[in-house]
Amino acid sequence: MGKRVVIRSSFIFLCFIYLQIYLTCAPEARGAVNISVDQSVVYDNNIFRNSSVRADFLYLTYVDLAYLFDFERLDINLNYNGGLSAYQDYNEHRFNISAFNADIQIPIMQHLLYGAEIGFMRNGHDTEYAVFDNRNLELTTNLRLNLGNRFFQAASFTYLDKDYHNTMELSFREYQLSLSSRLFLETRTTLIMELHLKQKDFTHDSTVLEKVIYEKDMGNPGYGKGRGNPYGGYGNGYSSRPDSLLMISNISRPGVSQAMLNLKIAQSITASTGMSIGFSRYFPASETTRYLTGQDYFYNEGDELYDDPYTYHSKGVQLTLTQMLPFDAKFEGYVSYADKKYNYNIDSLSTGGNDREDNQWRFGMGIRKQITPQMIDTVNLTIDLLWLKNTSNEVYFDYKGFSVMTGIGVSF
Image (cartoon, rainbow, N blue to C red; front, side, top):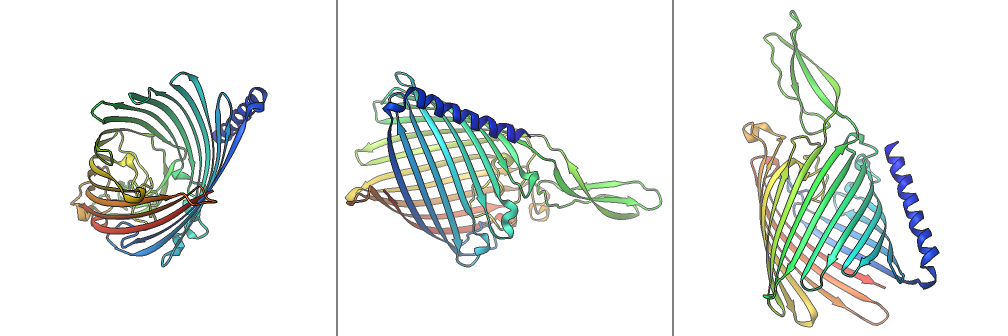
């Protein structure tokens, strides 16, 4: 019921925006259409990012359709994005994405801009992995203060409703408040600070498999409960004359919260060379989580079910070098290190009963080239390489990996 109210309210909000546009600005409107198609091929020698080390090719195709309404007093952008994936050997993991976004930009006064955005996205599968299909509703409102080459400040609030309609206990609502600042110094140095405060509330109770151990004669129970993975796992109970049975129980878990802080110093060394160093900290405020780590499913390391940032404390640093090359090509290379201390383990034998701890090194580089031929707006060529080493006290997450991606994007 709550989601229906949000969707209805969002629809009414959009209708109101369009009504205001056509009543006040329509005679002055100008439109622009943009169509882009992107094709990428990825080879990864450890595509599922774990100790099983399975290699595969991944093929990605995305189509983006955008229409910009350029009014005298505001801009509105409508955007549709659709994507398909295919694997060479593990194609049962293929997925598709479709998304629609509408955003509005309204100048309030000189240097101050108000923005609002609504987005719908569907992530689906046509295999047994449809259990992870989800639908997203996202609403964002923001204010941006831009003082040109001196200072930039932005504040935003985002509401996300993510519905795993085939696995309801993973569904959640998330609220995020973000602040970001950029200070441009005369030494060609840029200081960047970002702060994100997030709250995630699960919309359904989690179902866990519980092993109840009891004494036959005395009926004196002992309990051992699983943690984390909604599909089960159970610990050890205790009893002098044990017998056991398995029970399914619904557990209502409270929401989780997190603070994220990013600091970055960027320095322009020459007209064609730049360097930056960034620091990041994650501060989860709760040990409650729901994850599916160990399912050998998620290609994207950033997926919340593979590596949910609400489940760990983290410190990280990244050094980046950017270099403009001949023929208007651009090179970017980086090295990063992060250590993560999780609030769970999936194999207590390998960790000695301790929670999971990871240390990860990443070395990446990429080259990008933009071409502007006749009859086509732009053609973007990319190639990216990545080496990584993840050291963990969980055997499953102790691994190395290498990937190379080539891509071409065409805009009309």
